[in-house]
Structures are given as structure tokens and as C-alpha cells.
Amino acid sequence: MARYTTLSSTEVAHIVAQYRIGTPLELEEIAGGFGNSNFKLTTTDGEFLLKICDEKDSAELNMQIALLQHLSEHAYPTVYPILTKDQKPLTHETFGSVMLYPFLQGEQPHPSPRTLTQLGKALAKLHCIPPISGLPRFAMGISQMTPFFEEVQGSQFATHPFVESLKSQLESMEPQLTVPLPMGLLHGDLFLDNTLFDGDQMVAILDFEEGCYDTLLIDVGMTLIGCCYTSQNQLNLKAAQRFLEAYNASRPLTESEWQSLDCFVHYAALSIAFWRFRQFNIRRPDPHRANTYQEMITRSVQFKRHKNDLLITTLGRN
Image 1 (cartoon, helix red, strand yellow):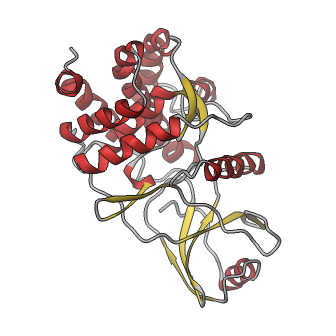
Image 2 (cartoon, one colour):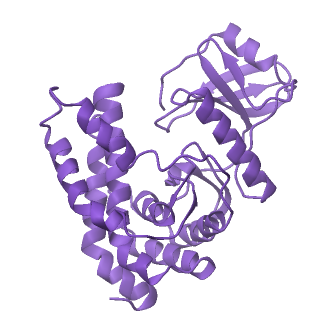
């Protein structure tokens, strides 16, 4: 869990009093997640997810709410915030902004072919929804990395092997990343821990906090790197194949997208590695998570090793 904020019983009571959800009985920390403080809240009326938005300012939260309202109009399978007594989607507390959601029953799935088939269909459906105006560009990519390189100049991190490698790789990848490709509405962070399943049936895609407008292939690469690997960071080739088949059946990839797929899988991996490195080594140092960025590098290497097998078995491409 991203344990950035803790709550006293008085603070919990103040939050609950703003909703029509009874009185509080219990508050439990929820493991997982890198960018928020998440709790399971039990009241006399039921169970809820209480999320403290540690990483977002008011403008970003308002855009996130507008996006969720837009997704609701398109009946997209996600979870929507509960409104306060004043019909507001969040509350502003002294320690930050709070959003309350229904606590959906389910669990994080394994990267099985059936799981990834459903995620392929769900992501394609998202990419066919027209974007709303004002969405930011992808928040973990080049637009954030460029100022980061300037930020660490003169610091102990300026010559860190990962920083030097990241800068070199981006310079070599940039021509490929700027090739004109289809753009649209992105989730931006589709990892397995941002999905909810009941057994082998998908319940919802969660956490649209990184929702944005950018190259659709970023999301495809992100889902491959975030949902198609074992806990030992080994690529599940069959699951990746089923994901691409299901996605392509609903929103066919263009020839240019197929040619750029490897580049954008690597870009997605670098983006998450960059975010984790900056977050847990510089912004919020955490020795237990300082090296988690390396998992993404391992996954990217795995994908490169198996990409030809994946493309050949998926659609007979080479």
C-alpha cells in the first residue's frame, strides 16, 4: 500500500458524516497501489473503498471526475464515486482530497488466457469511446522524463546507471515514438492490480487516475507489460496472444501499429520504471521499493526475446 496518509477515528467520522452511508465501524488498510492511500471502510450500511488522493491536485481530480462521468455515459465497466449529501464526488480534508467508492467484491486475477481475452475486449472498447476535451497527455512518458533529467543534474542521481540508460534509450527511440499513429482515450496504467475479477469473470477496470489522450499503442504496450507476466516476471505467451487477438478483433491494429508494437511495449516498461525510480528513490524514498523499477526492465527484455513467437502465433506475422 502507498502509506502516505493515516486517519484518526475523528477524521474517519468527519468523512463518513458527509455521506449517507451510516456510521463508521472499521477502517482497514488495503495492500497494493503506488500512488494513493487506500482503505476498506465498513459502516452500518455496508463496505466502501476510501481513497485518499495523495498524488493529485484539484485540477487533476476534477478532470478525473469528468472522465468517470463520461465513461458512465458509455456504460464502461469501472467503479464510480459515491456522491456526498451535497451531491459532490469528493471531499476536501485538511490532509487531502478523499473519494469514496462502492467496495466491489472480487480479486486481482492471474495472467491467464481467459483473463487477457476479457482485458483485450475491454481495452478496445475504451479506445473506441471518444475522448473528452482537456485530457492531459500520457503522464509517465517523455513529457515527464525530459524535465526529470534537468531536475537531477548536479545531484547524486545524475550519473546513476538507470538515469544514463534511460536518457540514451529515449534518444534512440524518439523517432519511432513520433511516427503518426492512432490516438484517443487511454487508461494509462492498466496493470493487473487495476482490474477486478470474480473468479474468471471481469468485474471492472479500476483507477482511471492516469486517464489521458495520447497514442493508443501506449495502452496496448502497457497492458502487455503489466498484465501478461508471472510473479517471476516471465512472459505468459499464451495470455499475451489472447490479449492481442481479442483487442484486434474489436479495434484492428493498423500495419504501422503492428510495426511499432515492440517499441511501445518497451516505452511502456521504461515509463513505469522511470516513475518507480523517481518516486521511491527521490520523491518519496523507500528502501523496500527503491529497486522495483528493475522489474520493468526485466519484463521488457523478456518481451524482446519472445516478440517474434508472439506475433507469429497471434496473426502469422513475422
